Length: 111
Length: 113
Image (cartoon, rainbow over all chains, first blue to last red):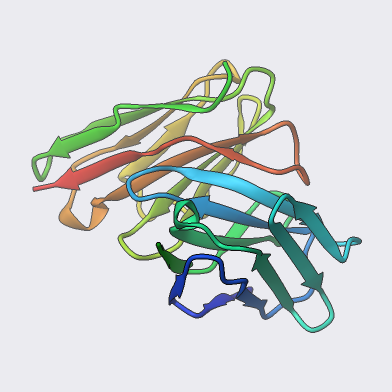
């Protein structure tokens, strides 16, 4: 059974710091991995999608990597800003359509 | 439409009441999904439609939960005889097709009192 774990559960950093969020999964047979952002009381906003054949994806200050063989992905946020404060969720696509989510990392960027 | 639209945004139901949650996917998106998100947890899969066909309903918690997408567009998630444990945010997502990224709606927050 595929399980997704995110570490840390919560993170507080001062503005301007670079930071790394971690995601691990138990079954390397995945189709893709997606990182989402969730603001309080809101839905999920897709940040980056990495197909199983890819190693990384970049969008602005965000960079996500995927190491399928070791069951790991990282989300790197450069030069963090208070507006980055949110919960970040990692999800693996294990069956071509079903996403399995981690519990998320709650990020607070202090001004 | 530009995004996935869900209604209502908030629903308070008395225990035992039936509720219906609506999802309007992005036009032309073949795949539609329902997820349930408990407080402080990641979303959990409920069911999956490809056009009007419900291909997977393995995540529905009980036979009180029922989902439909009769014309391959709008979908409704119905919960009969609501219980307190049904309190959660119900998220709908759509995708052009399998293997592609998903677009989520803002969700419906259901509170059963």
